[in-house]
Image 1 (cartoon, rainbow, N blue to C red):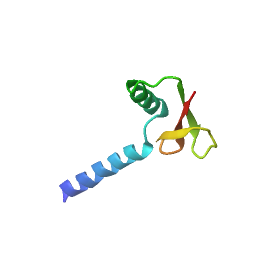
Image 2 (tube, one colour; image 1 turned 45 degrees about the vertical axis):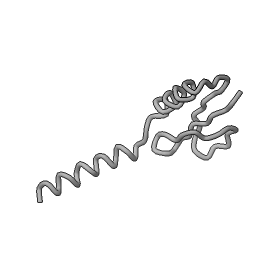
Image 3 (cartoon, rainbow, N blue to C red; image 1 turned 60 degrees about the horizontal axis):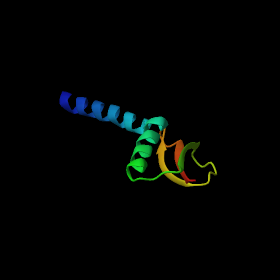
Image 4 (cartoon, rainbow, N blue to C red; image 1 turned 120 degrees about the horizontal axis):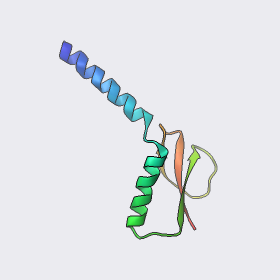
Length: 74
């Protein structure tokens, strides 16, 4: 029974950490590195509130899904 309670406790902690999401700047830098690795240039990545009308393609979400990272080709 104690092992079961320990497992439930650990899973609830892990679930809370996943729900928090990645910080936007961390995710933005990871996406930027992947785009540069593909040889792209002349683009911008912008962090906006989710649902904000922004031109470009949404390439990620962060901060628990409250913000989005938008890719614009310049």
